[in-house]
Image (tube, rainbow, N blue to C red):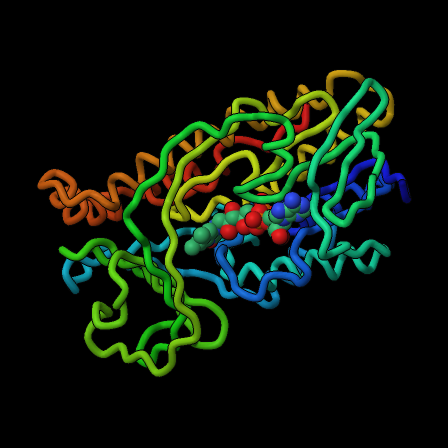
Length: 369
Ligand SMILES: Cc1cc2nc3c(=O)[nH]c(=O)nc-3n(C[C@H](O)[C@H](O)[C@H](O)COP(=O)(O)OP(=O)(O)OC[C@H]3O[C@@H](n4cnc5c(N)ncnc54)[C@H](O)[C@@H]3O)c2cc1C
């Protein structure tokens, strides 16, 4: 048995790092362990939304994300190469001073880890959570290294295959699709750096998101995405390609006794809408507030955490499932809507801003009580 933190956090992805940062700033002692020997070198998430920037503002990380990241000023919607609508979000109205910022997840994690290191906390890598038991006073965790750690609380932020969730015997109901989505990070000549693009094509959707230094992320169906880019855009370099399948799943509860789940350990959904990492950081913020109160002797606060987060996260999983089904659909109605709905929506003053606000969860506050 070694150093007993107040909170043991399993998983040093964005959720675990953010939780460690919020808790450490509140004076709580944490240990942050990660099964992987090194931090990830490839990025899943790119979009950091205004809510995340708001929550991270007091930590100084939001300013660093803004300084390194790329703002998105327009999203062009195209059908078979023809632009049918240009959506220009009014960030000054949606979230003044905090536009949606594009930054590779590895850099967001790096900035969170840097802020944490400034407070003297570093992820301990190469040893993950293997099993846990809990009693009235605390949690005993067995790590894969053979070490045993006793803590007052434990947060499982250990991703979609969460060992914490398994140790709690919680199911992860939902469904998964067999259709592979492809991803390519490429350098493109001829494209604007501050605009995203969604192309609806017969082959399926193609999403193009710019990020730092002339590199763009392509996401869509079919392995060969580059030939489907608009005329005049030339791929000059392919940096990374990957394939993933989309699942929509939500745990029945996000807290069991002294153990809580956050981020992908608790909910997974399609990347359309760019919410996964952002929701994980919101979970981390609310968990930190509830954990602090629990440690200060207020009973029932981890149950509050579940009450405060489960509905919000679950609602997004359901919305993401509907949105993804629509984007994937090749039905005549869906095809018609993809052509005609975007220009109509762009023509209605304020509609895009309201839709974005709702899509990013800015239509409700992040509550800690
Ligand atoms: C293609 C794609 C694009 C995406 N784009 C966006 C986007 O634009 N915006 C957005 O918000 N989200 C996006 N997401 C989702 C986002 O990447 C995830 O939601 C996010 O990584 C979840 O963070 P997390 O910390 O909860 O889990 P993870 O990032 O999975 O981190 C979990 C950590 O736990 C560690 N671990 C695993 N097992 C153990 C164990 N037993 N013990 C200890 N540690 C363990 C892992 O090594 C890992 O470091 C995207 C996802 C994909 C696939």
